[in-house]
Image (tube, rainbow over all chains, first blue to last red; front, side):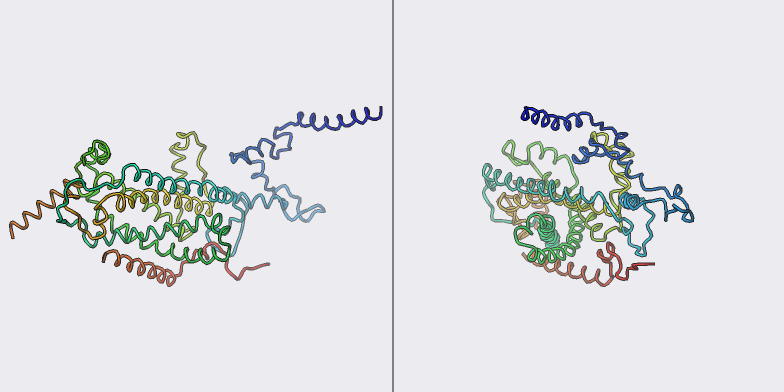
Length: 394
Length: 43
């Protein structure tokens, strides 16, 4: 009997919490205006919640009893009210420091940025760069080196003058250095510190930061040089459509005609100019923090056009706190740099092991006449004609 | 390869020169995000 009674008591005690859980009212009214279980679940999934119940709860000095009265307080806001006002940047803060972001004491967006930076962004970097290298290796195994089809003439023609090659190499070397030091900064905390320890990484991080910040100017200078030197040759025209329809000779076997730069090279050129330009601007905004903001105004404009709605997204955040501007600039800088790096990997492959005779164009400035006839037939014909007419007149 | 070697020299000159110039002018990202040393702790 005693055992039976114990069993009934045990079942009863277990049943009470179950019924209590079923009966829980999850509406906001039931929580006295505080967050509900649904709010917590949405927040854990990173979804937007209406947290006005918290952001608006910052006290009301007008309702406070005067300090002269018995129950008078030093204001109508409690400590939690004050901290909430700090968190939502609604507190009336006075500081002797006149820096641009000194009035933001708590910044929620920082956690989202940190988690994205240490998780999805690193995965994206690994997949994008690793995937590109694998794809190029696969292409090499299937297609092999693109060789000069015809018989070599032993004669060369000038492809790039010394100043063009100087601009190219300045851009190339600065980009590779920036890419490497940028990756060290990006993956340092997550990958390099666990692998080499804090002390070794500290030395590496300080050095790579100095190099990254200062070599960036060489990259910007080189970007201007190659833009002004090559923009004339990179304006899209009809020959590009034909070149693209033949996939540059991959389809149909024969080499489609091309001018000084074929459509593929033009695409690389504009990718470098546009993405490199964007990386430079976002880099300068990171180099001089809080001096100029790129994202708040852009987000506001996109919202006013309804662009996020086209993709089923909620409105982009606006206004942004100064630190958020920097966080978005960092993400943009990293993502665009990774995309450009993947493109440059393909460019390096084709300019070196991928194609016979291609490296000479930048290495020596002179290319085999037959190579020029096959890959840039229109340009080669123009150069050879000018050469022959010059020799005739002399 | 002269162009390549010149580009390396230019890269070093531009990088060191830019650093010296910025140090001389004096903008500091650290100053922009940290408070001054003479923080007033009380009224």
